[in-house]
Image 1 (cartoon, rainbow, N blue to C red):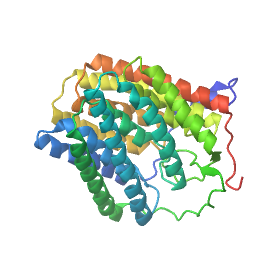
Image 2: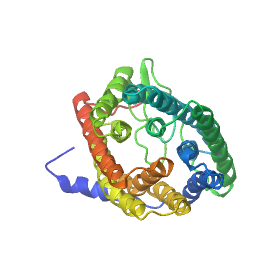
Image 3: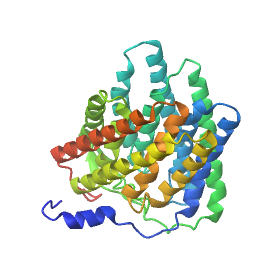
Length: 361
């Protein structure tokens, strides 16, 4: 990246790509979130909303592929999301039973991110990388839980996954079919194939990274981000913020994605503050969350900074709905943790000097 000419990079950061028929996907994603939340509201169990939300994120996978491989991908991703919810809930149970064990989430999430990154890239998930599983693990670990919460988390998350799969099958009738994609060659021995970017515009074979690069980018990088952010109070937010830049195939992409993540988050926390300080009733929060989820899907493949304007208040409103905390501290922690995460991601990327390679090596 040429730092002597910032204007072209600023234009790239602010450029919004053309509409590519994302509306059906956005509506499906919004319904996947809204319906389980409404069921929990009607039954008086909004404290379970995080489990449902992360199960609903199953619908976000495979948006650019035909229906059969999309369903396969969503079943795979849904299983990992459910496992992430359970691991996070288990950490929460441990933290509630044994004081001073909240730090456990940092090494566990770092190792989890590494494993999920390898699996997602091997299986050619779209979007690639461990963003949603790490988010699920971290968020669920932050909510106080008893031993009985494990069964509840499993049941609610699985139900949300099944509902998301059903919606995918139904909405597929109304979505334009994607152009057939070329089959990429398999990974060479000793490497893991990583998708290039989670743009939502198509799949990419991306660079080939050795296992050591995964260990540096995810296991070490995310552990550093989480350890630093432990002093703030939400270490998993820093780890989530570090995931996206470190998933980029080269330094230029990582810095661009880090800048978009930070800029979108800083504006998004202001929107979240305005929403949550107004004290809306739960039904209003659920309705707004559905709209925010739709907005995120409309823009995530066109401009990541714009998408963060929707994603940030969505994440904070869901967290607040499940476990209400003072709003000022919530939004300030999100901003600070995001800054920590993107700075660590950029430093790790520059130090490791990743370079994009052809699939053939």
